[in-house]
Length: 186
Image (cartoon, rainbow, N blue to C red; front, side, top):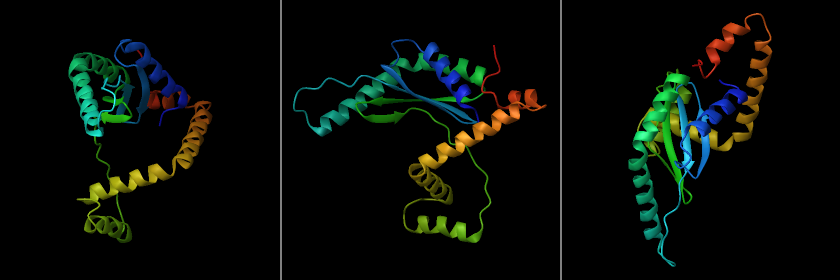
């Protein structure tokens, strides 16, 4: 886990490194052990007054696709620099007229051991058509927990940051900092 300060430095690096005209606004930069996700807002398409919902949806989809193709080389260049600097893959997405689209993102495998009652929950989700596999069912459960426990997870992350600050004051601080820092320097 990285600290709030490290997360802010990461966001600052992207804000400074991205070309000014790439996004209207850099809306989100998130990070975990494997991936940095960068999401920016792009302009909504201009439509004639009174256009239908289908027209709006198609126009937004077209705008997102145009942006993705037009900015590919720039995004690849920035991602290469960031991946070298922060040792994580970079994923991209946009927000356009209230819609969010991810271009790339990784699905990291996670090993877990579940007891029978926990496996039965996953198997019930599969039998009910909610998921196609145990992996899908587990991802569904994680998304459900994430959606309903934002306050609790925020409090837990803040507590973990406090633990890291206390550890940083200990005798092995230089070893811990080197392992958990999101950047290795230039």
